[in-house]
Length: 88
Image (cartoon, rainbow, N blue to C red; front, side):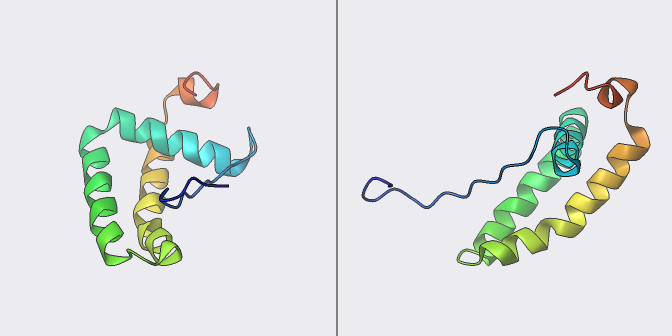
Protein backbone atom coordinates (compact mmCIF):
# COMPACT_ATOMS: atom_id res chain seq x y z
CA UNK A 1 0.00 0.00 0.00
CA UNK A 2 2.82 2.43 0.89
CA UNK A 3 5.90 2.97 -1.26
CA UNK A 4 9.08 1.39 0.08
CA UNK A 5 10.71 3.64 2.67
CA UNK A 6 7.62 5.81 3.20
CA UNK A 7 7.21 6.93 6.82
CA UNK A 8 4.14 5.70 8.69
CA UNK A 9 1.10 7.95 8.60
CA UNK A 10 -1.65 8.57 11.10
CA UNK A 11 -5.05 9.50 9.70
CA UNK A 12 -7.86 10.70 11.95
CA UNK A 13 -11.29 11.33 10.47
CA UNK A 14 -14.50 12.69 11.94
CA UNK A 15 -18.08 13.08 10.74
CA UNK A 16 -18.93 16.63 9.66
CA UNK A 17 -21.05 18.38 12.26
CA UNK A 18 -20.25 15.86 15.00
CA UNK A 19 -18.85 16.82 18.40
CA UNK A 20 -15.31 15.72 17.46
CA UNK A 21 -15.59 17.82 14.29
CA UNK A 22 -16.71 20.86 16.30
CA UNK A 23 -13.80 20.25 18.69
CA UNK A 24 -11.34 20.31 15.81
CA UNK A 25 -12.81 23.48 14.33
CA UNK A 26 -12.98 25.30 17.68
CA UNK A 27 -9.41 24.24 18.54
CA UNK A 28 -8.12 25.36 15.13
CA UNK A 29 -9.94 28.69 15.24
CA UNK A 30 -8.72 29.42 18.76
CA UNK A 31 -5.11 28.74 17.78
CA UNK A 32 -5.49 30.99 14.73
CA UNK A 33 -6.79 33.79 16.95
CA UNK A 34 -4.16 33.25 19.68
CA UNK A 35 -0.69 32.89 18.13
CA UNK A 36 1.02 32.63 21.53
CA UNK A 37 -1.09 29.59 22.39
CA UNK A 38 -0.42 28.13 18.94
CA UNK A 39 3.32 28.55 19.53
CA UNK A 40 3.03 26.92 22.96
CA UNK A 41 1.16 23.98 21.37
CA UNK A 42 3.81 23.61 18.66
CA UNK A 43 6.54 23.51 21.30
CA UNK A 44 4.59 20.94 23.32
CA UNK A 45 4.13 18.75 20.24
CA UNK A 46 7.83 18.96 19.38
CA UNK A 47 8.83 17.96 22.91
CA UNK A 48 6.30 15.14 23.09
CA UNK A 49 7.31 13.81 19.67
CA UNK A 50 10.77 13.20 21.10
CA UNK A 51 9.54 11.83 24.43
CA UNK A 52 6.99 9.51 22.79
CA UNK A 53 8.86 8.72 19.59
CA UNK A 54 7.52 5.16 19.36
CA UNK A 55 4.34 5.57 21.41
CA UNK A 56 1.52 7.17 19.40
CA UNK A 57 -1.03 6.66 22.19
CA UNK A 58 1.30 8.14 24.82
CA UNK A 59 1.90 11.17 22.58
CA UNK A 60 -1.84 11.69 22.14
CA UNK A 61 -2.58 11.26 25.84
CA UNK A 62 0.21 13.66 26.81
CA UNK A 63 -1.45 16.43 24.74
CA UNK A 64 -4.91 15.85 26.22
CA UNK A 65 -4.77 18.28 29.16
CA UNK A 66 -3.48 21.11 26.95
CA UNK A 67 -6.17 20.47 24.31
CA UNK A 68 -8.91 20.26 26.94
CA UNK A 69 -7.86 23.62 28.39
CA UNK A 70 -7.72 25.26 24.95
CA UNK A 71 -11.20 23.97 24.11
CA UNK A 72 -12.49 25.29 27.45
CA UNK A 73 -10.95 28.71 26.72
CA UNK A 74 -12.22 28.64 23.14
CA UNK A 75 -15.78 28.02 24.20
CA UNK A 76 -15.69 30.81 26.75
CA UNK A 77 -14.49 33.33 24.16
CA UNK A 78 -16.05 31.92 20.99
CA UNK A 79 -17.14 34.66 18.54
CA UNK A 80 -20.67 34.47 17.13
CA UNK A 81 -19.27 33.58 13.69
CA UNK A 82 -17.93 30.31 15.10
CA UNK A 83 -21.41 29.34 16.35
CA UNK A 84 -22.90 29.80 12.89
CA UNK A 85 -20.10 27.97 11.14
CA UNK A 86 -18.66 31.22 9.80
CA UNK A 87 -15.11 29.83 10.10
CA UNK A 88 -14.63 26.27 8.91
